[in-house]
Length: 289
Length: 307
Image (tube, rainbow over all chains, first blue to last red; front, side):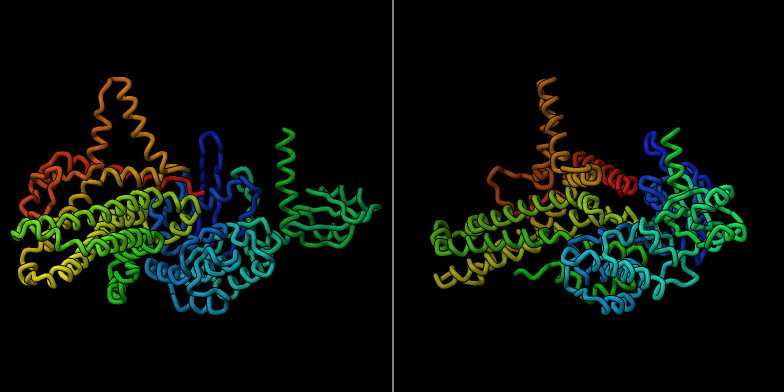
């Protein structure tokens, strides 16, 4: 069974279209990166998946309609949205007590063990913790819940590099296994490129790219071309071109690697470069139209 | 005196019991505890006022024998000595009403303002449970806190009275037999129950405004009723709206108690009017309005966009 299955998911705010018919399928055991510019509909899509907002179209999360029963769904789904959502007045010990109290599949010992590795004191209030520590606390709570789907919406926003690295390392090493599914949105795509199994780009309420990382790596290729080879390389139809140190870097979608290698060394592009090529191109076209 | 009631109330034994409770009870129980963690003023404010009352009473204690000697028939003596007890109850209830009102206004507004609602909604707790626990905090937990604080305050006042009176020659047994402390407790308990029901539309309104308003819930709660009263007055020259609101805010004691005079000190169990209260249209009408507003509050919490 797919963890998330959306067909024709639509959401309007007044006359503004937030989701214009999203089709998305996330299988169990995958780590999906949902990437899009601000206002593209990422948060709306996640809110619909989490049962926080009503929607039109078809949506099944772990086989259930999320809007019909958020509270039941949340026994199997966890989410960390942004960083500053833990209530500031709460003590660390109270957060542990509360989640242990209301959540049937929370393993308190696991959360305590994780917290023991941090500087977080049980008697501190959330408002006394640094931003990084609040995220560690939230992660400790979430990782101790035996959930089947974890949704992360900009989980590392505003954190320094060390906390950000640690966040994803912990998630992969201590939490993820192939019975769980993770959906993550972030602007810091370079940090998650290596952990993703799947990738989706969302722009103006629509999915514009939906691919596994294996397919992504064979589909997209980047070649650094010398000026004298440029015309020949351009003839192969790059989707994007940029200049670095006087050399042109051409990005190809679905070109044969054998042909490309004649013009220079072929690399797998970063998600960020493909994102700029696809979404940036759309935005320019949109502005021109 | 400052032992947090939240810690004193649910000790390890009730917690262990809640651990085994069915799935619907546990989220509710922990939601209630969470309300007391966040809103410590619900028990600190009444305790502070009780402390001030006791301090003032102790300062005036030297004058007690003088008062009591005015008239030594036991029943009058009881009525006279009961006045400071009623005043103490009045002040503690007053601060209880204020913290209760502000609690309601913040209950569903603060979680949206600091975006912690996203954390609460990530837990398997339904909106009905969340709103229900907030309504229960103001309708069940707060009255229970006020009852205990007032009763203990009155017991301490009685101890002070006896400590002053017994050395002047009064018989302890005689004093105890005539002292209305337990009757006052019964009257107080009924007052708490009846007020808890009577105020349902007020707390319902405050909770709904708290769930609805983007900012300044206090103004949104207060201005529409005032505006409505003014519009009515200037358009028709009548004051039905302001009368209705004023009557609701006054506590409905003429419905829950009979023969309430302007200066009556309620120590007489015969004044408790359970039948009259529960056959009053105002009580049931208010309760229905309160429940409708609460349902609207649940709907607002469920459908309002979290971000």
